[in-house]
Image 1 (tube, one colour):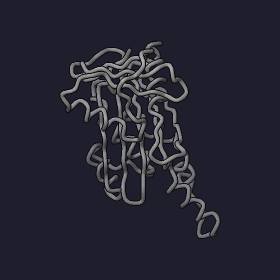
Image 2 (cartoon, one colour; image 1 turned 60 degrees about the vertical axis):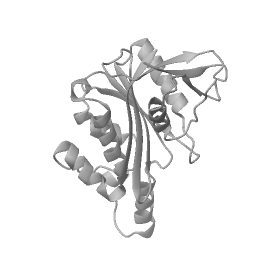
Image 3 (cartoon, one colour; image 1 turned 135 degrees about the horizontal axis):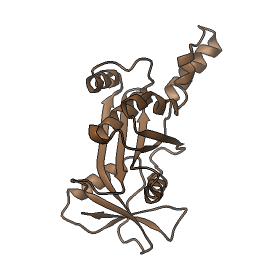
Image 4 (cartoon, one colour; image 1 turned 120 degrees about the horizontal axis):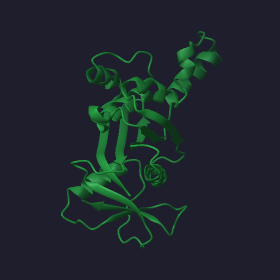
Length: 224
């Protein structure tokens, strides 16, 4: 069992990401790829300052990944227009985001990236099952799950923060269920928005998220 403490969806015009980071930190994040900036903004928004030192894992998925940085690097190499700098190569590695945000999230101990192949589909069931297992084992005090995507014009992020113990304002309890789901939620990139919409409704019936890989089990979300 775990508790969802934060449900966040963020949308930024792509050109405003550096300014949003500067506003959050009071200074720019130098030589950071757009995905790193988006990861930082969501992490800080998902965890209050008094919980950023606790043992934390980050699980994040993306359909776009560092595509823009990769294409820019390939063009530079293939056209011979210039010699790529070391940070140009680092920008195409999704894992570098964890290293660059750790100074601001000192409790971050583990980060895993899950690339997606199909636009409009997510793997929230996988991320949340992993998070639930790690919390049950006591490996971390909290787990951040996220979907991050970038287009030439927009930056979009959806976040869930989970812990084994409920916080003061934890809105949802999460557990594995063997009961046949009655109301299934779609596993889409904006899944946290669907949970937020459900919380705003009067219907308090549990919701379920089912993984195709475990058709007899479902993640059950119960309002607290």
